[in-house]
Length: 433
Image (cartoon, rainbow, N blue to C red; front, side, top):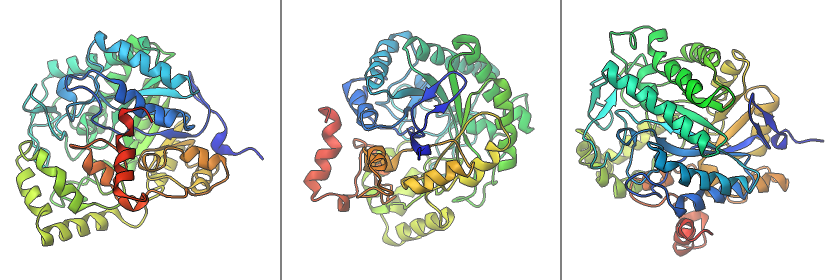
């Protein structure tokens, strides 16, 4: 019998060979100025040659002020096109599609770099968890940023890539406009849900103007925000009912697919679901101390035994019991409301779970990050008949706390025969293995 996991998925202007995609996951592989390098190409090829149907790039800022960390490749000028063209060409050699994630961090970032001191946002209130400062965007700045997204999409198309994704989830700039908990504007970009969605819809229309109607465009949404998961004094933010409406409007504006996520920040207990490795985080969080008004306090909590235990306990309590498929209920709600494909992210690494979600009509495909970092050949293991990988991802999230200052990779030493083997695998991205 045909396996739904390996059946092609058809979009309006794109066909992908299977239903398992590499989700956006970011690493500091690139040059400080936002130009790309061979390490980034090596990183993406780890997944392309191991069978994923499509790769959604890491966070690609449409301008330098929108990046969340230095050493992330950008798409802020035409001079970036040749690098992305070469990356796309190399990925295509493995019958894998490459979709660039167009992004802007707004007030949410880790280390801003030397080019700017404050982020731009829908509000002038600092980000609550780490206290990252920001400025309320003027109408001229909104207009300019809309154009930055449109030009980023135009450059992606000129580079021969297969489409773009708008990162309108997980607390970044689009979330800051969409969210009822964050957006406190009183102009046409604030107030009602329709007004809060205006920025996203304006960007979608601008991309269609610059990149055409036949270029694949998808958006990633935090369907439920859970904005008060760790900060109970905050408002809860958008609900699934809000996001169903946003998804419908996005479809009408010209979007080809919706990717369903959750959470109004990154990291967030619901995204990526799993543990919070306080001891590991304490080793890298010092890099962020100068970035926000609350980072010194947070570092003190992480380096205090009792504080770390309490924080980790609150994280796990806010996360809940479900890890794999945590966003499927929301994905189902959106899928039933739109006529375009819906993809879902959230800890997937069991073939039968993914298969059931697609066959049950919860989603049309899944996007995976951490379990593919743990097992680059996860798709090949599924094709060989395995239901779960031989060495599954532990959802420890050590990969994500290390990325602030270390190369992206799996840092769960228990999955390796030795620490030396773990480090060798992490560093393999620099020699193409």
